[in-house]
Image (cartoon, rainbow, N blue to C red):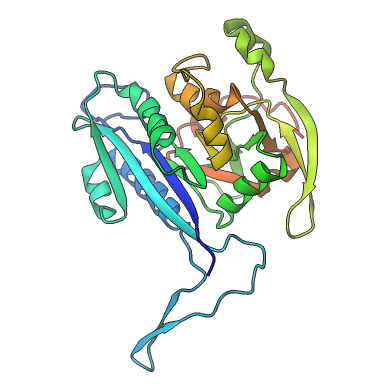
Length: 307
């Protein structure tokens, strides 16, 4: 049996409903919503684990059986072993949710003056922990992965581009009214304004259709050098993380705010960042489980079709 792919996940988590607001959606009356988002995030990450051989409850025989190795799909990773780390500070965290997953994750309690430093601490853990995982995934605490092949696709892109590219998902929120579809929350940015604030961002030149490739189902995919590279997460293959380890200082600011800097500027400084083209968006998506952007739909005009 082949060695499973080792995936290390780092998730900064913060929640404080005592009247303070640190940019983590922590407001009075939101405890249940944030609890659901965190639980869905952790469940989706841990649910990505798989093995070539698994167990079946034989009800008639009153015992367990072992499955044969799968033949479909033929090109998936042989197995995935998830190592999940959650970073918290003080008592500003949803302990009751993390306790439900306590046997499947590692909780790191840090003493930080500013909780906005949690993302950088989670990133540092990914960089410093040995042995280096096959894939290192940074994830904000309200992102939900619905695609069972999500990790396969990330590694496939890194290998296809000889480790030059970090592939980001399209992040969306679910709208409550039927027929409205999803709201994709990371639409085009005014890149010239961002470059004016931080000239180092000029190395990233947004461009449509920079590459095309076939996924294993044979369908042709198109990729853009993202006009908005942010997705609240990043994933690095083993060679990519080893390359990042050689950098003296990783940024804590330079792209929007401290949260966005860690999730996006970390990789944007050293790799090309792609997303699937808009007409191929379904190839790689991630749900924003705490839908804080939906309010914009009530007053923004429709500007027409994109992609």
